[in-house]
Structure formats: C-alpha cells, structure tokens
Image 1 (tube, rainbow, N blue to C red):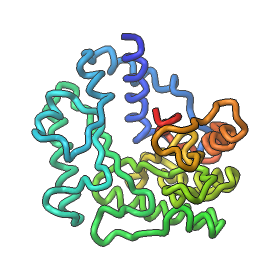
Image 2: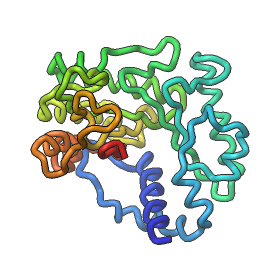
Image 3: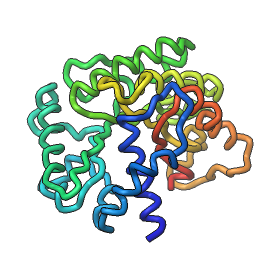
Image 4: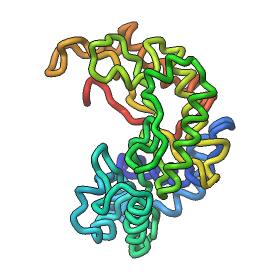
Length: 273
C-alpha cells in the first residue's frame, strides 16, 4: 500500500509539472508540490491510484469507457498506433479529444497525459517535419541545431493535443553492429549529454506552462547501447560496477542533465527488465 501511494504521489507530481515547472531553472524538489498533491491523494481510492499508474496503448482500448472505469492516468501511441481514421492532423486531434473527454466523466476529472514516440519529428502525422535520426544529428555536433529541431517537434506534437514525447534517446552505442545504433547521438557520453540536454530544452522550452512546450522523457536508462554482439537472446548482461556501466549512466546524471535542462521523466531499463 505504501509503494502504491508513493508511486501515485510521483505521478501526481508529474501531472502538476505539466503546468508548473520551468525546465531552465533549478529543479524544485518533489516535496515542494506536496501541498497540491497530498489533498488529491487523500481523496483517491486504491483503484484510482492504480489507474493513474496504468498506461495502455490507445489501439488496445476496445471500449473508451474503460478510461472512466479504470481511471487511466496516461495513454500512449506506439510505433503503429495511429487513429483508425488515418494519420491526418484532424484525425490525431480528434483522437486526442475523444480520449480526453472521457476523463470528464470520472469522479476526480484528472486529465490524461498522452505520450508518443516523437524522436526525430512528429513522424506519425502526415505533413510533419521529419528530421535525421540521432546518429545524424550527433555528427553535426551542433547542440543549438538539436534544440531547434526539438522545439519544432514540440510545437507539432502540441498541435495534435499530445503533451509528452518519449525522447530524447540517450543511449551510448558502443558496437555499430547493434541494430539500434542510429538511435544514439554518439559513442561518446559527453557528446550524448550535450545533445540530450539541448533536446530537452527544445522539447520543454523555458516553462512547461507554455502551451507549445511538452514533457521530455530521457530514455533508455540505463545500459541501452551496451548490447553485446550476439546477445539478443540472452548472453552477457551489464555489470553495475563495470566501467562501461558508468559510461552508459553518464548522460542520465542528475547533476549534469537535470541542472542543464531538466527532463521531468525517465524511462527505465536495466538488463532488459
């Protein structure tokens, strides 16, 4: 029960951050939001707390009243999770509005956080600007360009109503034979850190209260990029004390990434768990 309350508290804070946190300023401690979060948590049932920690893909929601029944806190669109009506701007905004309307029928009326993989542009939308993959942007070594790229992406994501991008990817790929090497800016953690910080600034702007800013999500913490060749079905994991482990963790350093440009959310992964 304690774990559920703590996790729900964190999610409640994340929702408040959408409208209250400046990415460019020194991050506030999560406890500074207790006065807003605790009264809300005190009103929530266990089912509502569990629902707020649940994030289904929209294409798997067969009945939209499930949003009201299960109190979903967030919804995502995966790689192929497009609206049934197509991938036009209108289809996406209608999908977002259709899902969000159901939260008005819940007891607490907590709006949904909607997330999408807008890693190199809002590429699920017809007519959106598509940018090079991170490996190409890393080759430019131009952090200002990366920030501008993600500012454009943020504006196009918000045009569809969505508030959250599952980006930037802060993998530190070490073996170019790995099939997802293109997702990383560089094999150098220092360059990844610089580019990732710029990306977060682009997504989040100077203030998340800005209607054209979106939540960033630094992924994939930690060890993504350290995949050993031939280990797709088992093989060697990544030792937490290994120097390579420190290499992969470097872009996630709170002292470095969050002070420069705070990403409000992290997507976690360790040895595929």
